[in-house]
Image (cartoon, rainbow, N blue to C red):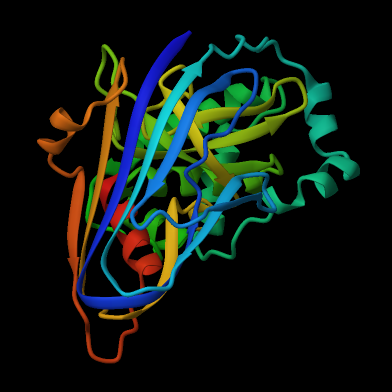
Length: 320
């Protein structure tokens, strides 16, 4: 069992006054037998009331508004979470698992996670899958081989993709960040009829260095009859484990954006996001000295409408 303290701070500094700020938060961690939340607090500047409800995918989602004029917005999530190990699955070959996955009721139940996007690279990806896919192995073994292919053939590189990069572009570039690696794995899972969903969260620092460590992160989960949902991190060629903290889940990254919203007023602004990890609770004095994990200046461009949602999406993609 691992215990982590995580602070996730989002700070907007507007270049002028803004009003009518309406926002949505997906900063509330998932809870189950493997991830238990000991304490979680969300603090927002101006102290608006937060209404929390479940979205279509079961994520706790907060909504708040700030109507009065303001020049900055600070959203801070303080989390204490306990992660327990997922039991080792039995990876003996079982043709019956493939039969269960393909049952009509399963395909209907998980239809949201089975629809692969239209892509010109379809035949090329299918060619790779054909070299790996065999029903003579446990489905998870094949999924791990998909993950290994992505890890070995795609370069982890920031700044070459955006939040709108398609699977075709990722396939052509053979590069990207954790969001793109997860996107590619989900595409492969769905092509073979295995339900796959996107996970947003964090990789907590540990004894070995991983890509995306110490910041927000993304990976995929596959649904299998004998394991239920099980996480695979193609960015690090590993199973999601006791250092992966799950915050939200959906079909893709747009279903899981930590913060998004709209407002009226000055559009140019500075966005800073800071993610801190620790073994104990945080105190204000040390935190005041911490530099942002990511920061960007969002400028107004002629003919382009900006809001905090598009800015945050772009920032999230670049920091992973």
